[in-house]
Length: 157
Image 1 (spheres, helix red, strand yellow):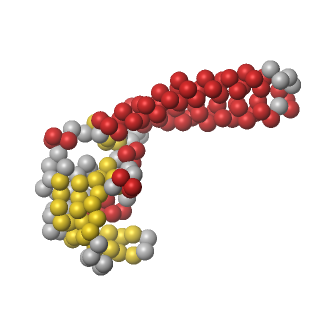
Image 2: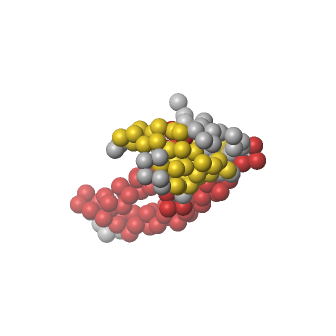
Image 3: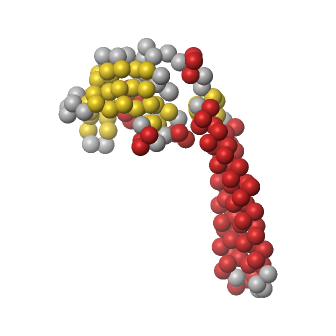
C-alpha cells in the first residue's frame, strides 16, 4: 500500500531538484569512481572498488525512494484551504498553558518540515493534537515528557 503525502508547489520543486542533483551529478561521479577503481587491477582485493559499488547501491536506493515519494505526492491548493479548523498548511499560533509561551508554526508534510523555519511536520504529536481544533480550543498533547495543553490563539494561511 502506497502512502500519499501532501505537499506545496515549493516542496515538490525542492524534491525534484534533489532528484535531478542525484541523477545528473552524483550518479556520474560514482560511475567515474567505479571506473577508476576498476582500472587499478584485481577487483577481489580492491577496497576502493567495493566502497564505490556500495556507494552506488546506496545512491540508487535513494533515487528510487525519492522517485516513489514524488510519484505519491499530491499538491495542495492553498486557495481551497479553510482556517476555521487547524489543517495541513495552516499557520497556527498556540499558547502553552503551563508556561505561557506563545509559538507559531505552519503545519506541513514530512518532506517540508523544518522547525528553524517554523514548519512542523503533520506527523508530530503536537500537530496531530492540533488538527481539527478551532480558535479558543485547548488541545491536550501527549509528548514524551508528559501531557501539555496548548490553547489555539489564531489560525491563518
